Image (cartoon, rainbow, N blue to C red):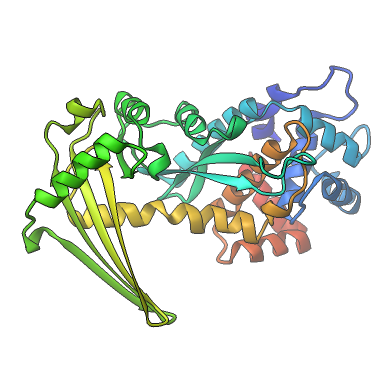
Length: 363
């Protein structure tokens, strides 16, 4: 409970005469989600079935909370404040796990979290993923579906000094480049037509630049009936930063991909805005590392937690439960046991001693 009180104890949005202790509710909710709970009804069921175990660590002076109590709490809790506490706690956790240099930004839609008749506007969370520690460093809801603004706001929750930030083309913008440069971070941002003048200049530069074969980086992979080859190069871009108002821009990266899937050949070409002139091999590694957020975070949320199936949709409930799921993913990542995330979840539900061990990460 120590870490719960230290990092989250000030967030209680309820009246002072509320019966159930806020940090107790939050810890029960966390434990329930660690064991596979999907919603507030599951949290109440978990508390009923695990009452004897919970009383070993919690006073539960007013008994067990109902699902309405959990629902009211997460509907009222300010998700921005919860996100700030989440980030502060995760910073402590990741500092203990080791330094983190590459941070990937990406948004994820919660497809089931919409009000009746508004299935065209599901909620969205933007996450910052630490490549080395493989944890969510911070996350914020994209209010009104504005992912680009949420990503900029998310930077305020991160320690960016000396970090490398990567993002897809949606986040390739002058305000993003300016903020990252101001905060002492470098960047690799996918560049597409949403930045028409800069994209055209990059295309012209790539077309005119002659890159020696020795300066190229190439990789190839073959597995599961699919092969993929990549060729990367980095081109110095003097003057583009000033001409296009894009702070820190030093080079343009180009990666060509050729995929063969079931005998069908596909060609792709991507450009990147770079704040440093990395080597071509480094560019390949950085871009590949960015997509770890898909396998390391989004895949688990979709497949293990079935996030898209969660129909919690009232008030702040969807965003707060999304943050709670990310906190659980971090807890599993921090645990040293050799097992899959699903395996750890099942063990937590079956084995109280293992669940206690996971919960010690909250100290």
